[in-house]
Image (cartoon, rainbow, N blue to C red; front, side, top):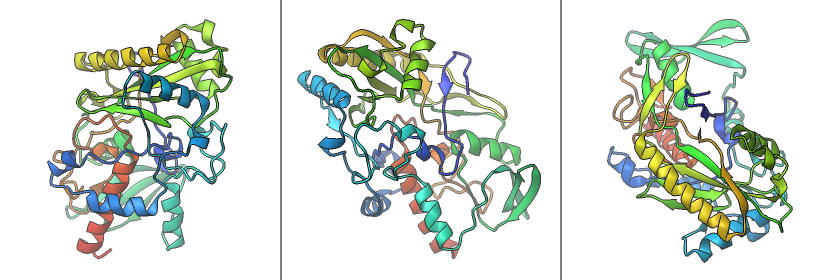
Length: 369
């Protein structure tokens, strides 16, 4: 989606959602935030750590650009650390850049792994289907109406769990007459800060191998080596045609902020501009990134326009759903980034998995599933 300030909002509309195209970075859920809403995610987090590949990359898979930025940040006395990745190191390849395109080697964990497991246990997957609305009978969720390759069909079910994401789920609720026409949201704005070095010829490595999270400031930084087409698009967007062919020698760093909830998700459009506090956070993060890149020996430093990384908070716990993720319509639940209850600024995947595992246990205990 293109916002009125020319910023982009990106997302993955595919089986497995954005996990299929993300950078496989895992951040633990902020348990104090969820505790304020009566939710304990510690048991789910412990179970997931035992099930999933969750660990920093071994040094052999940290690329030369990430290593250069890590060394520069640490030389400035910054608490730059390796980040947990949802990657199977034995299957990962050094010099590969395909995380965001969908890992061809099976190294990156995605939600498709769970879908395969569910189908093996008897679940039925219907792909190429677009959910139109939730069906309600006698005040309860009774199924969904879907557009299946041009044919409108209904699927009956006593329990419906929406997982359409921060944009899709509020739209489905509105189309069903179960939610408002417009809802505010957060987007976790990101800026890429880039600079050229003369002694590295790379550009192909796992992004977000290491970084820094300043919780109080609402700012996060990480290395962000991008695929060449994405890098070229960012450079062209801000008029840096002189940098279009410098990809293999360019250090790229992500600056992400925890933005205020605002803007609007509507039935046909999405729009969110930066508030004054958001701009201050970005300026602080960009200043830090430029200092790190200069310490790393970079020149011709520039930054991209901001784009939205994690739309969510549009069906928030305490507003659109309760602590069990159930909407005011009995039998209808939402479990995706839209339910995150407060401004965010983190990779959401692991938190959403914790919420999903907790919801599954609740449904099993209370609904006999």
